[in-house]
Image (cartoon, rainbow, N blue to C red; front, side):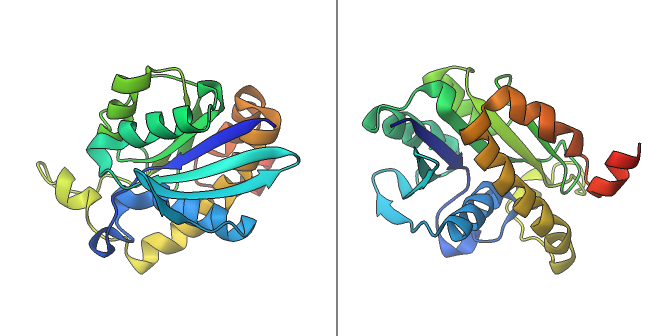
Length: 199
């Protein structure tokens, strides 16, 4: 059976729940809920399992804290003998406006510590989906911003986008990275699908 690892980056602990840096966790929670998957506290992370048309999908929320995310990803790739081409990592990104997203098959870490540590341990050849959290903070305020909580208004923008990303995860597993990028990256800017179709 083909196996896939979907990793949502974040920090464990109640004080980090709902913070911008935990957007990856939020996406995985939504996907797990839609898939009836349940997370268990396992080595290096909260891990859930589901299947999609005969493919086994492991969901990973690392509990190593963001800067050591690579430990969790490397361990679970090896533990379940999952090909790196079947890894998708979801992270927050201050360089993208709130609700925007970008899917890539490889590339730089964009200054994201979680992605950076994963790259240190396994290289750059893995798919990543970056979710925009905006950058409405003063100079020097990035740490407070990413560790701050989303407002209700921001969550209102983000929630439908998280639902769209659950579809992207399914497409990644069933159709692969190239087809999924072609299909969904045009929707990456946070506008309605209708607006995009009318262009």
